[in-house]
Amino acid sequence: MRVAAIDCGTNSIRLLIADIDNNTLTDVVRMMIVVRLGEGVDRTGEFSQAALERTFAAAEIYADLIAEHKPERIRFVATSASRDVSNRDVFVDGILARLGVAPDVISGDEEAQLSFSGATADLVNDAHAPESPYLVVDIGGGSTEFVLGVTSPLSAISTNVGCVRMTERHLVSDPPTDEQIALATRDIDDAIRTAGEVVAMDQAKSLIGLAGSVTTVAALALGLEHYDSDVIHGSRISASDVHRVTQMLLGMTRAQRAVLGPMHEGRVDVIGGGALVLDRIMLLTGITEVVISERDILDGIARALAT
Image (cartoon, rainbow, N blue to C red; front, side, top):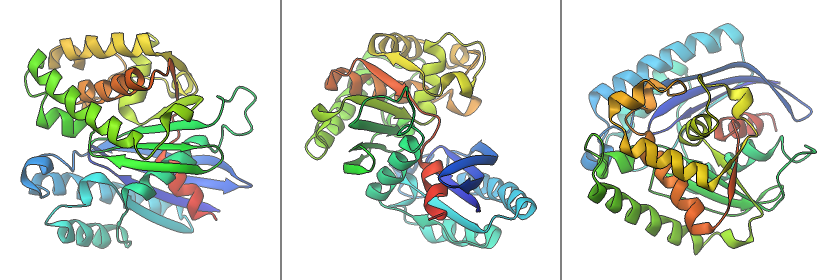
């Protein structure tokens, strides 16, 4: 079955058109456009007109690709930034007009479950798979999901810390000050402790990290000159290397981050916040390495469409 999955988060909108056969997922198109839909939402409680226009322009590009490749099923999922805004109807109507499907503004729990299934589906039968139970951590723009499970989730929670939210709320200087980093750290640590009341992180045998902040930190830790998803997927990054890269990023100016080889231009402003979330998770849980997955909620949406 050919399916099309769209994941619209706080920072980016991504498309996966894939063929799925006997639980094997084969990419036809995989694409990301940074639209920063959640820009300013933490402060204003609504989508800005500029952010909506950027998102609708990306949706038109995706509509053309979907028309070209003719998937049998389509699902558009919207996550953190879309849950609580006052002008959500404008966003929903604009997407429906361009893609012919309305966005499913999913709960944090469903987001966590889809992230888990997307990240772990190809690990179960891998001879080099990390040991289960897995703690899957999906660090997005507005939220971070924590999911504990083996072949399916046992517990999950979504927390309101992410790379965009922490940057806009705290890390506003260039580079951020020690005081700003301390305030962001306090918010992140509070969220991790809250998550720990629902998700028994101490039961995890492996930490699996997802999404752009995590994969970018991995690329930098590995010393890659350019982003290479084949090298990044399945790599194992130590807690000490995560901490080293996080401190480096937080100490850099925007201009210095922008020239790093693996850095996507849409992550330059917010990568420090995302790296700090990962660093604090590893510090507070005591987990010594993170397994990096290039598979995430987008793959989970696609797999669910084929069932």
